[in-house]
Image (cartoon, rainbow, N blue to C red; front, side, top):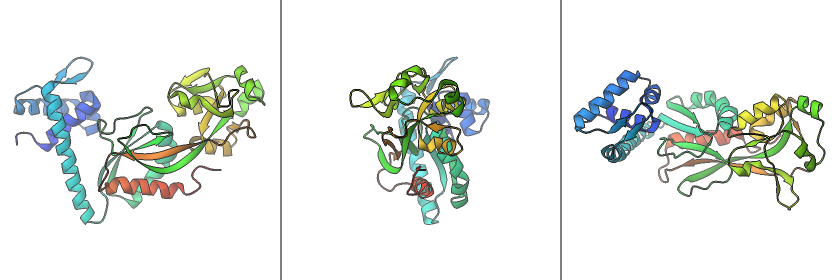
Length: 300
């Protein structure tokens, strides 16, 4: 075999990262070292794998075909290493976790230290993406998704559910007044999502008998951004309990329309591709999260 596993790993990381500099950061290498390894691999194979421009990298036809095989080889090596770890009775190796920023910050991050104490041989790589991520393309082992799942190729395991509430800061309410009827929301600054549009359905009965659909005055793709805006007194927001429980308990955010709010809960699932012989790294992390969150999930 001409290519080494390390060289294959560099190609895979460069292709998934999109740039050599981003790949070098993930590999904890210098940009020049990553570039040299890539050039060395191409020289060994006698073909160009990536077309380089000033802004991006694109796989050649040969590079795309080779990458498909490389991905399978790397996954097979990881599976072999995991098999040996299983014989030692302890999960080990790299575990790549993906979640939206709010869930990463408010749920996963506070639990990392305790997980590492229990599973010291597992190396965590934590990535945040607000949209739907291709787990294979991003080389993600397990992702946490909130709300309805649409990708039928994923295997999902429920880990919790979280209620959504309409909230505002005391400063905002002091300056604008407390709305008492949903119709009064039109007179306020509403903080909503750019996508998906379903997140702009608030848990109040609308005139058509469906959930109230709001038109955001300020929109963001990131729930944490909306939370920060609400804390700063910019407007009214509808967010999930998992990211606002402490804010409500400390009085930094106040719930609106308590009597009129419908109990709508968002499902939280761990999703992954592997079907049989589920990785002990993945199962250990999912089981740990379920146990840590407890049966009450994010209820008050």
